[in-house]
Length: 325
Image 1 (cartoon, rainbow, N blue to C red):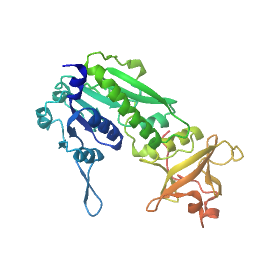
Image 2 (image 1 turned 90 degrees about the vertical axis):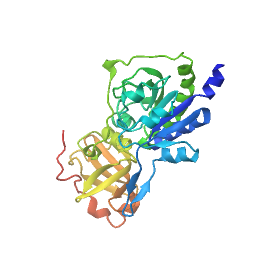
Image 3 (image 1 turned 60 degrees about the vertical axis):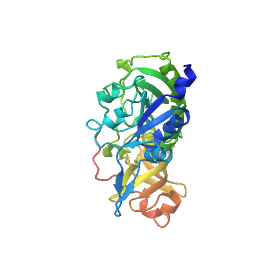
Image 4 (image 1 turned 120 degrees about the vertical axis):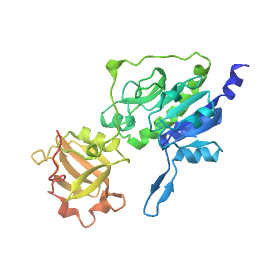
């Protein structure tokens, strides 16, 4: 049997959940025999208790692929093994995978991770790449082991982080990059020609899941730090500040190095115009251009300021909030 035929007959089980993993699954379907998809359980949302499928499940069902949604995969995995996959591919699945699965496939369990490992291990590497001021990030294809993103690296590819990138734009770029790199990498795995590069423990950083307190903007920080935080959380989960006891989510902002207001208190709204709300930070101003008050739709600053312009100037946002320094 030549290599091409063997690859065409490769039996793949895919494990993933969020939108990020959709292009990866779609490319696998185009190139291999995807015999099963494992994803998180459906969610029940809203007052009408509407059942919401993971997007991955929708794609699988569109292609008549078996779907498994164990509540706890540590205790419920036999159906996956019964498929007898040659290889298991994971991407942002969302549960810790037991050794019984990791050790089963002939060609191993392979993970598509959205960072240049060993940097930014964890569940939110794209958010943190922007928030933490990285100049580049990328995709790593790796063997899975029992640790969190600790397995041997097979291949990786980098991408620059632009100054106007948001979580969403970087997410979309990395998702496509990951799908292409995986398809380029799989043949070397099957043919036994792939690399196995140990991760350097001295270079490890983490991109853990975002906590609620990390969404609050701290105007005691530099404008670059605040700008990175806004971009890195846009649109999900979104950064915010408190204005008159109401949470205001921020979706668009620009840096302004104007030092005219350097004597003003950090967090003070120093001026407004049709294009922005200007808030004093440690070394300049943050110009808010798009926002949302709880219970209302996202809007540009001009819409928000309609009838509120004069009342905002001089207000200290986040008043009464104690920052954890």
